[in-house]
Amino acid sequence: MRPLRNPVIQTVLSSLLAGWMRFCFSTIHWTYEGRERAEAVWAAGGGVLCAFWHSRIGLSPACWDLTRAQPAKALISLSPDGQFIAKAVALQGFPAVRGSSANKDKADAAKGGSRALRDGLKQLKVGALAITPDGPRGPARVMAEGLPLMARMSGVPVLFIGMSCKPAVRLNSWDRALLPLPFGRGAIVYEIDHFPDGGDLAAVAAAWGERLTAVEARADAITGLEGI
Image 1 (cartoon, rainbow, N blue to C red):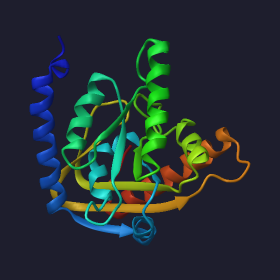
Image 2: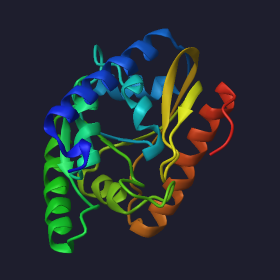
Image 3: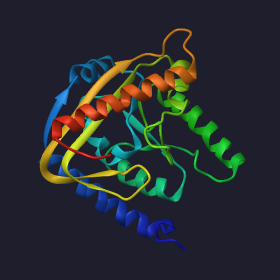
Image 4: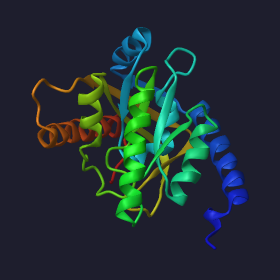
């Protein structure tokens, strides 16, 4: 049995990861661009979709002010790795809406995706839903149509969030995932949009993917982080 499939190991490692992330976030010097857009969303309350690329999940709790913002949940894969990440994120105040596009069985994947869509739309009636639109297995920085579909069905705004920090650890994963190190420089960049009237899902996904990559690149430029 793979270690991450063991619930005890999952719990211990998730707790350690969550504690490490909180420590790093508290020691990083953060720079913000477009924060007034996020603050306007927080002040308005209600539903909002928060989008960032899968590689920046390890930084995501830093982008949401739990003392001011509406309740948030994260759409995390049902895979074993997804369960591990979901626990670490939940320990920082972001419980998961569980869905899957990673299961090998297409029927199971469709069932998980349908449940995630239903539960995600329910969450958007009361608060925020965080999505990594290239996850859980990529290709990296290519937006699937799930995010635009939810935006169209719900009518809520979409916050594009670019996050970066330096120094950082890059994992040897499909997305080159980034994990923070303490006492460095961090950046969070926000942009906002709504699904356009009469918009085509594929066209919107392509355009929004470019915007999301751009805000992430801007965050990287602020911190001086290089390489993808």
